[in-house]
Length: 247
Image 1 (cartoon, rainbow, N blue to C red):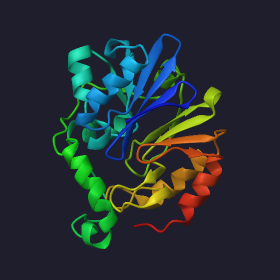
Image 2 (cartoon, rainbow, N blue to C red):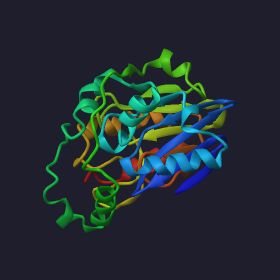
Image 3 (tube, rainbow, N blue to C red):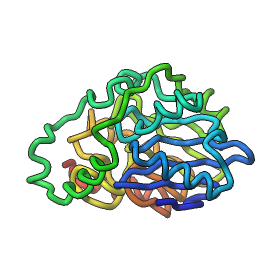
Image 4 (cartoon, rainbow, N blue to C red):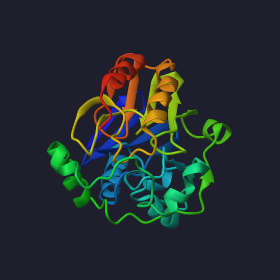
């Protein structure tokens, strides 16, 4: 589903509880995250709706290396020669999208948290088990981010993965939080501001600590990797996330 202008010139494409974002900057265009494989036709449709084409994508910035943020990244890289940028700490995960640290085993989550089952089922149907690894990445650091469309400011938010980053768009009062702060946990089905459960988070203590970096931003819109946008002071979203139990 296409949600234009979630923030000024920032458009969301959502499917199966997974988000990716198109950031317009005049004639320039940045894609943040590559969702799941089935989302590529939806992104193309969104581009047509904006009067754009896939060849207008100047770069793909990935918040972290998990499979549900890499979905069609390899296609962009190989077919359209789009540079793919990622924090180097997540490069190994990007090459091996199903091999990553998580604190808790996922086996019993469907029994403990049945609300997550429909979300995970939709993700599977959208190609969650068929994501191909990506190599030949460019480092996503502060200097590289500043040169991207929208001039995002890189915010280090490790915990969900070692190299997780958020992208702050100061002129638009917006932060793209990836999975550092979500409003839907795919593993439990819980909604509202929170970190992702230990089923997919490498270090929940560090993930909670990284919320401080988001709380300190001057932003009124948080655009997460999963779930609907949060509108209001991002510090309030962080406060709500801190009150949630670690699942």
